[in-house]
Length: 122
Image (cartoon, rainbow, N blue to C red):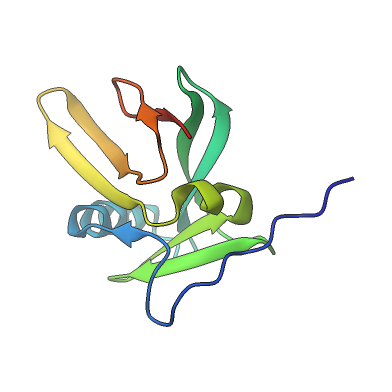
């Protein structure tokens, strides 16, 4: 049995993730529709996709023991310790274009990404 990953330490006041204004606005609007003040946006990394790892997004109402929480503009984002090691320093954004709407992660830890931006390799 392997030990659970430990949370990395961060300098005081430095968030492990950067949330854009567009994310704060979009997630805030989505949470208002749900009318549940306990909901948080969960961002996670799983194996798969065309590049080896893929990003996932879901709403969650309770943090888990290994979660790190980032708050900005009234929204709360959860990232588990395993996923956080791949996401430290990433910018989370939300885009609307002719191709559709989507969350976008600009990840400085990714050595390559797929064309759609939803999977990456390290």
